[in-house]
Image (tube, rainbow, N blue to C red; front, side):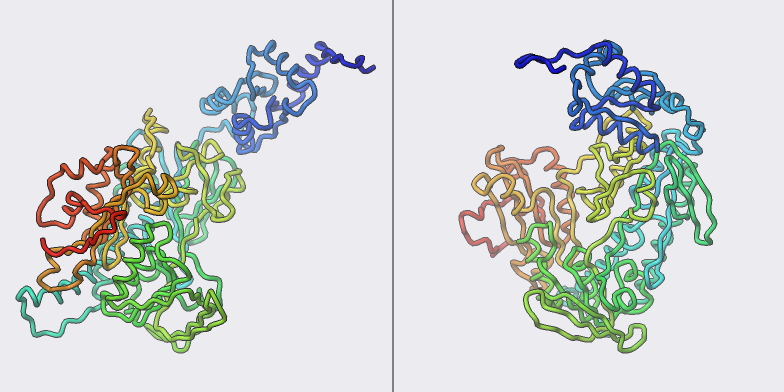
Length: 605
């Protein structure tokens, strides 16, 4: 019988108490929850990741929800949600549930023998790149039993490599060495003006360079294996894939399979170059995964893309004397300061690199086999019907990279990924939505794809897991350098992002052109190098962005990055005495702002 108008029915407390006790007794895992509560969702994800069924009563959408919460408070002395029961025993809230999982009492209450078996390893890391190796060695040094799995799926052309990941084998290391080879070519030209005389025709031998670089990389691969062995880290050259919670399948090159369990897992699988999905791309094109060990000179090369990988490769290939064209769909160096990016491109153009803008390849055909062969590229304009056709010896694709996360069984254990890019969302401690799975490096969603970042994150993660540390990786104000012919170093905000974040009226940008002393005698590229700092006027003119385009930009940027971490201001820069004559000293003498519109060309030392 409904209550009279204007009155509220009083709860039947005995009936509600019986209902609560029945729910607790009839479900293996009972969660009293609220649909909007993030802590409730974390607890549900924990049980889902363990493949344990649970029943959740959402008190915010249930009749008598507030009354049920009062009864729970009487029963458990806990007034908050989630309120978790396992096999009739009260666990508590979110923190208590995770603590029970961590100390093993939750597994015992669940009565799952498979879960309570001792794990073979404390930590298994999937991926033997810079981040994974750093994490493994740190964890082992803290006394933990660690395994690293690393397996390189060969490229469509069959290229693979040893332990160490992208940076060592097909990234930073060979890229910088080939960049150095190109710089030496420029130095040879400059040397005549400095009085060096030589009659011999100077030419570059691709095979000699590649052999020397690969020999060095091989020594690094061996060094990593020795280092793991010395620290008692088990290394498997096998492909890792989750088959159930806390358990992976490892498949080696011969197809032999082993299974391994661990209490904790770290995903450090990195990324691989993306293909265009057009006829002929995987059959006839190469990527950076192939370039650095290519056994023959690539000849006339089309580089497709405008990423830092594209421009770096195009730059050193041109510096080695090759005919190089870059095909760009839209802007150069997306995500970087666009004024700097355009200056990078302009310098490359004046030094022989051709650019085709607003075109994308739609087909690559092989005209002739060889080392190199001959390829025909058909490209479509992005803003109209125009079609281009041109012949090249090599087509290098550098249109982005994809996270290696879709084929390692993450869906089996419930780890969430960003379906658009395959990257893994994590919290500020690099933990995924599954409590025993962490991720570091290039696969992190919204984080920087840089080797030193992965190394730092890996070390700090191991220290938090096993060393009692609470220190987290700082992803702010990370310096980086693009090793194009004219190097571009940066730390902090690009100008566009600074304006968006702080407002143009709150910023002051100081800038200058400069001429490295070493370039004056050869008489080349006057007023081409460029530096600027972006200052926040509302915060004591603190430097929030530093950018430099010039020789040794990485060396220059690294030092200033430490100062920016310490809160560098324009006043402190002005008070700093520069080292003369250097490129870096321009940051201590900047006095012209962009807003003034004054001329920034330099006329003396």
